[in-house]
Image (cartoon, rainbow, N blue to C red; front, side, top):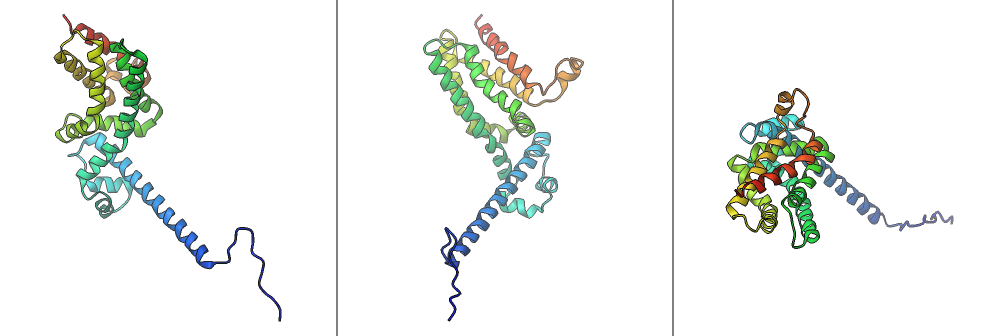
Length: 240
């Protein structure tokens, strides 16, 4: 009788169930990757639209049409528009907050007992501006999104949740840098800083027109060179 059993290749078990299990695992990974890609595409589209029109100016149908899917898919992943809005806000918030917190803690370690207002502001602002310089249009869309919604009730509530810890970290350093200043002045100073920052992140193009093209609202490199120094002078001027 002829023996037709072939030799197994290296690493081969001869167990078809193992092969089938591996194939199923690959399929599951593929579906997970597809789901993740779909979610990112939806979030990108929503981020862009919210940056242009805010929460009230965008519908789930608008997002679905931009992605090229049915609205039922958005309901499946996000339930409703508010959940989608919160997901868009949260997706990048953790990145920028983490970078800022790390920069502020690093600055504290270096500055020791002698922090300066400008040094603290550089730590707080520069790493964030770097995201818009290096991250390209997706991060700039997020910047415009935050700028648009930060002065709305729903946006302000999300700012409280995601950004308060890092803002209060900055304020703590500013208090040590300005021991003779009142807390009231320091909080007003931060208020003016964030107002200027949000106006910058909005990229309205107004400075382009006013300056006759000398300045550009998307030139975050130029902003980074100037904003911390400018704002530090404003803080110091508050003590009359």
